Length: 162
Image 1 (cartoon, rainbow, N blue to C red):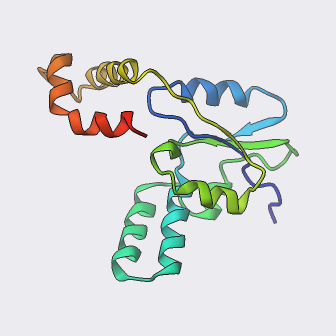
Image 2 (tube, rainbow, N blue to C red):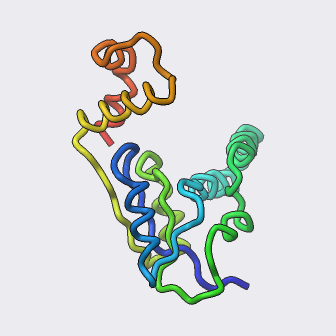
């Protein structure tokens, strides 16, 4: 039986330094960060809570689709991401829960004394970093930055108004 549950959450935005923070926090001798970044377990938990509160086939399908898209979205698989052979003060993970604000209630229910770190960045710098990242991974072809902004205006406005 695992008695220590995650109690440290890095929930910042994309392109805001969460990977670096995840790696740095994991170097501390009292912190065990998950072996993979961004398991998004608590989004699945949110879907499970919604399903149990008001069952519908559509909600069940949404949950099953979400869980099937991620390797660590069941409790047993999520727990494999942490080293329980040593008693760490903090067990942490970094997922972009900032985009899923209802997950806060799931986290609070399981870990009422959890520490939460929010990493944010100037929205324009974040947007440009996202553009450069997408260029690097060949997701953008023949768009300059201004065209990219025009094509994705609605998405970026939603990210800026978190």
